[in-house]
Length: 401
Image 1 (cartoon, rainbow, N blue to C red):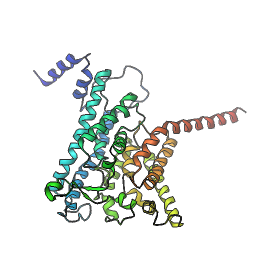
Image 2 (image 1 turned 120 degrees about the vertical axis):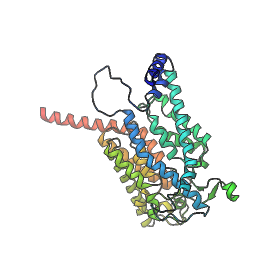
Image 3 (image 1 turned 45 degrees about the vertical axis):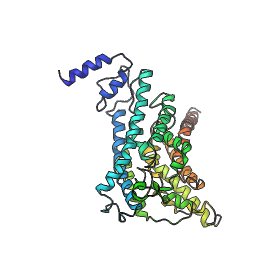
């Protein structure tokens, strides 16, 4: 009996049962089921949710692979067993040893993220009797990229369960959630396990066995160093290429820009949101630079370090660029109107730098700013639409007068 006939028999077996959604999700994992809508459609296009999610994942894969190499490099560099990478094409960076160490640590994060998250999705699909939606395909890839490489797997699994259930399923599933699920997971980790998310240590794999030292060698990340008014050991090109400590996928600004171009070219990511987010961050950075230049803040202030950072440098440190490209552009939780997207993105960038500066204990605020604006996105769209309605009403009154 052929594989096709076996699959057909299994489909008939599970048809109408509680396990039908789980079987259909596995059966149609790599292709679109042969189904058509039964009602009239407003828009006809070749793309669908699965294709859209797959393109976003493809845009994230370079960041994931680079994150593996960088995790291995930071490990060996912190132990003093490797020389400086000397740029994006440095021979000491793209080595098999770095990839093996990085993959050994990063891939379990990916496995837990997808395994636990999809398990919850399948469970809700079976209980509620609806098909498994593809929305978590991107969330499952985003989660390992926005957490520290040394986060315990049980912690990540707990956060994923919370994020999927509270951040999405209670609202009705994909397309109904008001908060970005990946950022909901990050927020849970931040508030439940703040010491693991502070980013104040450089991770070193197996350091206990190798050097008799703690698992993480003391050494602040870039944002932590700025927050403590410490000197920075990395140049601007290191920050741009991503050869610095940080969460798995956020360090390489070069690859994030490549991903942004892919999303914009395929019309999946909104260029208005990306540009306005970066403009908002630059404006807030300029304001803080002006405050420092005016002498209102001195170098004795705990806010001086991040306030004095050149405004443009905020884009190549931390995760503002990653958040602008992959998080703020989420079509479900972002503003839907064109004018609303400009306002939404600008406020994300503006608030991100404000939180980054005024929260020296945890000098990063991108995910908090995006979650806050997720809540206000419908309000922004409401007032934009009402403004358009009022302008049209005024023109109508003038014409009829």
